[in-house]
Length: 247
Image 1 (cartoon, helix red, strand yellow):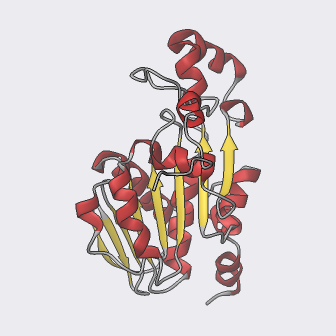
Image 2: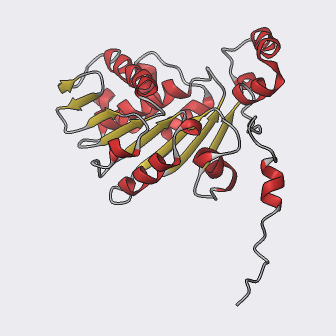
Image 3: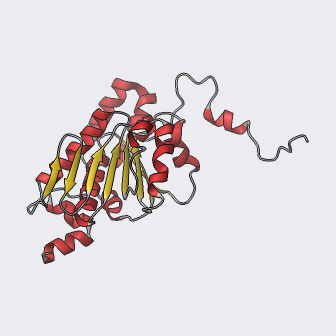
């Protein structure tokens, strides 16, 4: 391994820069974190997909025999993130040898694999020993998929990264964000915090989509869904741990 390769292996941010991506501060933190549970509540067009694609490629290239899974609500979304991985691979000055390359997976000569899957529980039960699991658009992925993949991280002590814009106060993405506990490293990036998005562009979006959807898509707020008769907060106040059941 060349000295430059060793430095990039030790620092994913240096690797990101080597393929032409200068990360924002929060993106650098995500690339470098080794926390086992990471949740990214980020605005549309904030750069979360580019960051996690780079993280996936770095893991596969510099950690031999790694298994990286990419999940999402459907194959189209998984494919979009996977294309970012393939693009990042193409930007490497010295590309590692691939044993397999197709629309849904990459297999490296060092034994690592990156596999793209739709967010369906039945499609992932055959996988084990996952080192890095990325779930894109997590707020719209079924809870059944989430519960199916969690056991895959136990034996390998793998890292889980959830990333999404909010989609109401429902599902595992909201639950982990709101009440998941201290094991989660939480990052919230609104559109106003992204240097590539201009204020006048945001204002045009607000006028076009209205305050409700704007607050969800660009301000990372978990708004109530249209179908709810009662608000999430009102429902939660109806529960208590102080009730003593009748014997």
